[in-house]
Length: 116
Length: 107
Image (cartoon, rainbow over all chains, first blue to last red; front, side, top):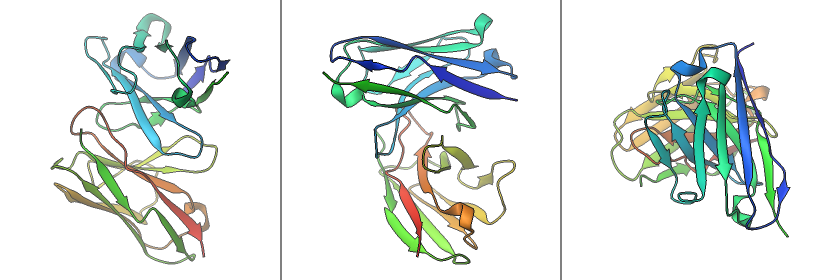
């Protein structure tokens, strides 16, 4: 089955760091752009970051710029999000999503909770 | 940044009703708009892209229209499985923004 599976979510204190992973299976991962999208509890969707298929182009939302770093390893069919200097407002379910002009495949999400 | 305003934010409807959700962009985005459905505890699901193209496997009761700054998602005859939240998303520029969402509940 074509799928994306996120992992790495956890509870972390403010100021802490976390690395999320997204494992892709049964499609040619290296051919697709990828994104991270998050959803705070009871809130709407917020796009976080984008990376092109070759990692040559990267974008971030202003809310995470300078704190989060997106990367990928096409040999391992994996996408990553390194999150530093975490804040309470980063608490959310984080989804990885495939695509550039539309997001046609999503993972089930991983929960990041930032509190003291 | 491009802001997307969805209306209504909440609607109550009955099975069989025709439902229309509107998404307005703060500036023109041609037809670079997608619609997603999200059920509680689940990931979003792509319904429509390029404003009016139905994603494979999505029932034909869903349709999208519009260009520029005004877009609509229409469900021609609401089914029990359609009660969910719906989001529009612009893909004209970065950051890729989403609308605030429309929650469709059973009347």
